[in-house]
Image (cartoon, rainbow, N blue to C red; front, side, top):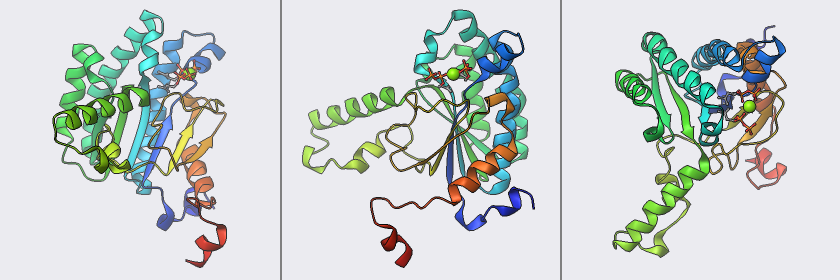
Length: 248
Ligand code: IPE
Ligand code: IPE
Ligand code: MG
């Protein structure tokens, strides 16, 4: 039996989010520059995207560049942005072929103009695709997103468009960049680090976490299947008791 055939199609997560970590260490292990690791991470992006779409997962969010990553050495930042531009350019045709829609969350204004242009063009071109949505978290951090949401909500209250009493958690959902995306049921982080690093703090409130020691460039479709299988063995209780869940 292959791993894939053990996956229960009726219990698939609708949305999987991945912190793609470990590119630098992967390169260092081979005596190469960090960017070599990022270049090799593109193959893993392709594998994870195709495997997710084939399984029937509807949303895949990939944490590609955090707000904090701007503080890396300038050469690495420039190389990463170049890689982003060339990858989007090369992969858009495959996204079209596979009927995958591209979206992005994050502070796009901070991206270099060329990057922003390439990204918006790919988002526009793929916008009617329906099989799966691939969300790139770029220049993204959850604290940035939540702060922005709070400011917008405060302004609406100030302008008399919103009553303080009517604010619920749904109001907050609706003001985040993830407003049109369901919360991830499964969050995967590679490279053996056990932290969130400012990723989807609000949206991951009830997600199942899966950690693997594999470095991102080594992550392949079998690893994704393993994560999904692990997820399918969890009991998601949402605060209730096990008995309540099993008797409903
Ligand atoms: C993840 O790999 C990619 C980005 C954050 C852009 P890293 O570059 O963080 O690799 P490590 O963690 O240093 O090995
Ligand atoms: C998180 O990885 C961000 C991305 C994968 C894009 P980092 O490597 O930047 O995270 P920390 O700094 O080790 O927590
Ligand atoms: Mg890292």
